[in-house]
Length: 378
Image (cartoon, rainbow, N blue to C red; front, top):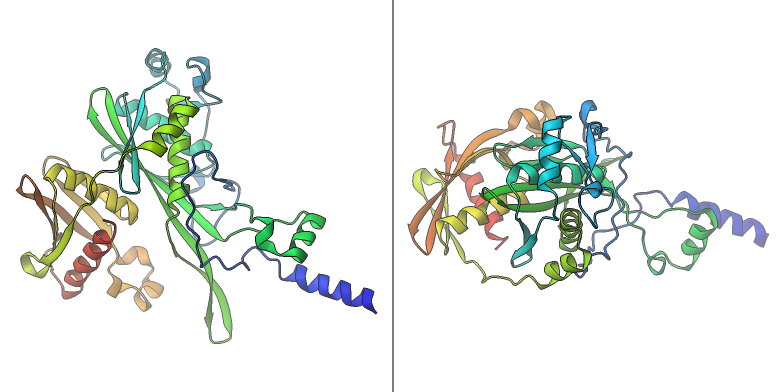
């Protein structure tokens, strides 16, 4: 009898060991520890609710060469220059020495400053993401944006978190306990001059959760709190990928000095739209706004550095719900412009305009909602 009860209990436990049964809503903040954060992306795992273009599912590495043949201390790095022998020869000459990389920091935000031109950094960044198993969903070299599709991240759950019985079962059947989280990355490349480039990397995550409608259960994807330690780990790996200097990369990531905190205020602007004021110069405000749009996963269609403006595409909150389920979210996107204007050398305004000129109440409400989300990042 005891034997039968044991097997019944075992079956119940096993039947409850699906991939998505673990509650990860209490996200514990991890310390930033370059080289010690596990990353386990399943490149061959597709997410049903997110479509990957068929031509991007298997990035090609044909017509590539290995950086390790030309640069010391770099392991298995591949850079794709689209098969051009001339480009390969030029890259070989450029990469005779490891690029020098520095780390800049504001608060939790870190980015790289690389002593190479933006064209070369662009190719290296694309290849790095491909090597992590990501498909490139969007590349816009004009505005310096590379965005991946989503991949599922399955870090192993520590044994102490499983409990004694599940830990024993896991060892017995080599089961994997995983978190239902998907990640994508955005890399933004900003040329500083002909031989120096800024590289910004941002993580955006979503979590699968159970949704109930009456007696029907289904799963939905919701925005997941950013794991700053994971984002920093990926930046560290990219830095190591570029420089090949593990000790120096780790030290620079950890010891980057933070600048002073930025203050922002939201007031009423022109035509009833929100106005966001930064207590910083127009150049720094432009840079901070660029980072904030990356963090919020805003779809940037274009930008004008001279005019200091962004052209973005977004869905207003008022249009979600029934409309999005009927028409599909893609049909609900609208175009807006965000402009940075200098007040004086220490203060700048960020203005919101409706490209269509309709200036609907819903759009004005959205401008306040967006600027409040940006304000919370500082």
